Image 1 (cartoon, rainbow, N blue to C red):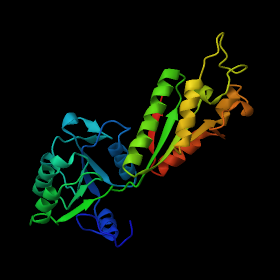
Image 2: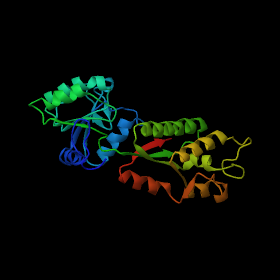
Image 3: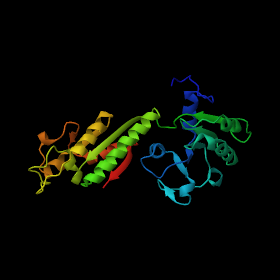
Length: 271
């Protein structure tokens, strides 16, 4: 969206930049405890960039998400809130708007797909709030995550990689680009091999990883990157020419993992 373009409820790209520059605390209504959910990616990204995240989720009230105390309702929050960020159905937006006014939040931010003219009017007509209503994806136009596989369990590998693919497809439906990186090391190194014959993983009956390889190729076709640890390959006696085509060999994937996390990538260990 160009700088001068306006959203349905007003506000240009410059307005959104100004808000995200001046506001540092966000109450995320509907923040999921599921690390594969789009709201979790947004929260991790924002937290990595210095924003204070305040989870609001009645199903987890009193517990913690991303190390932060979870509130059941917006009007129960007992600390300053700049932005109330809504990841809930549109029908719930008016009540959330009323609660955001009660706690004197500066901005009501409706995520893409959350549309509520009533909620917008409640905020814009209130004398107790700045009147800023934004409909956009706060802070995240690109979902970034590191999926760190060390498990040697084929079923678990297949299940978790399937979740990564599902996440990519969900983000695409919301017009959010993804940059997902799968790292394979330790016992998971075996999934990158065409055959385990002659490797450390050789068993009386060589397992069939064709289903796993098919899933990896599908992940790569969606734009995902798969990297296998070169050091682990050497330790497991897996030759370079024994690696399937959709996998890239990196000398030390641990170094890559740390670098990506420092750039705000969500970290998802699969052990």
